[in-house]
Image 1: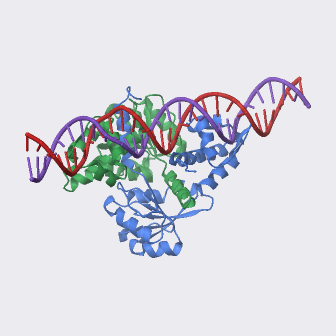
Image 2: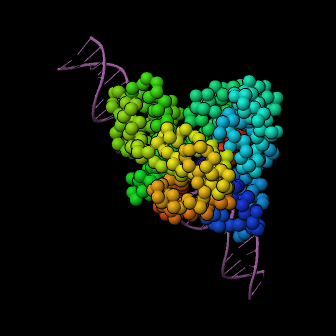
Image 3: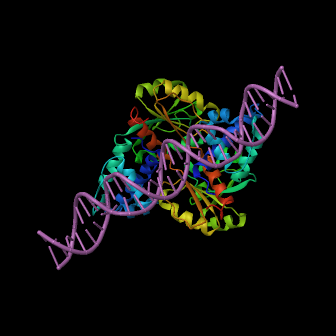
Length: 209
Length: 209
DNA sequence: TTATAATTGTGAAAAATTTCACAAGATGAG
DNA sequence: CTCATCTTGTGAAATTTTTCACAATTATAA
């Protein structure tokens, strides 16, 4: 059975929300309350989960802890996954120090940059290595996920090298399409796209929405 | 007629690609070539555009310049829109120096932060002002779009203040849901969500995909 | 001018996704 | 135990989005 991409994205949102719920007091929550919290319809929440099995108890709702670990198991973020960041410009630096990754099961294990100036600047962790060592280090560490934060003009070459070194999933922040072989996944985040969507909403307020 | 959100997102991608095409040589392009370039089906491209009118010439294709300005008109990014950034941590700093915004018709006019240390550090442009002046400055400058790059715990309060000050569209980088009044748009970017989607792809390789 | 080839725009069909409606299971009170 | 209440899981319906198929329009060459 094919699972919609949007379902996977919503699963992330559910998980984030469950984390918050856990930090409060809640032990169980109904699909109705939970859905209103994350901003979807209760039936959608239930259908999303139904793709993967049964997670709740009729008449009672969902156990917050159990559901959270269920979603973690679905997404496959249970055991910590190592991530490499390529490009330590301002965005790359921001991602290096972003605490959100480790909270969600990812460890930024190493970063690479062309410019020698950046290398080793950051005191200890994660290491910033010269781009020349990229392929070797990624192979050595068995890294399967990489983040591209280099200029658009360099992104495709970086992607090619990453894939050759064994990377199977790429989070791309460069505003360009990446061509990768079958079997390699790419998720792209275009920072300006969000603004363009907002500009459209502003312009067409009162009509469609 | 209701226009799908995904259509608007794709329009952004089309526009980005048209920019690249323009920087090369291409004067016209067929929906077939264009679609394969951006990674969609030709019919989807044509249907997306059809929501907004006619942009091509039968037997010839699309004029790159005309189509680009057509999409710009649709999105409403023709005249430069001023944007405020709230939160000058590492992510906020990265966004401040991100050239992609101005390329796409947005001007980061001002930034705000709580910590005095950040304020005025950056030599001239854009100004970094204390958060206390946020409401007043946003009103004064007539800013309608803001970017939230503060910790999740502070995001809702910031959003409330922004809306009270007249902001009508928010690009939210805090990993939390924002509640805003009707008539205000929010687009959220959760940096870790992309990685979770990738983790899922890695785990379920060979089955569904 | 006429025929041929190219390519858009679009109504209709197909596919995918969301929502509904309710049976099935669980809980708690009497 | 029985009844009333709550809430999930799910087949079916409704809606949305994508894809198809082709008529309509333009360009080009003979």
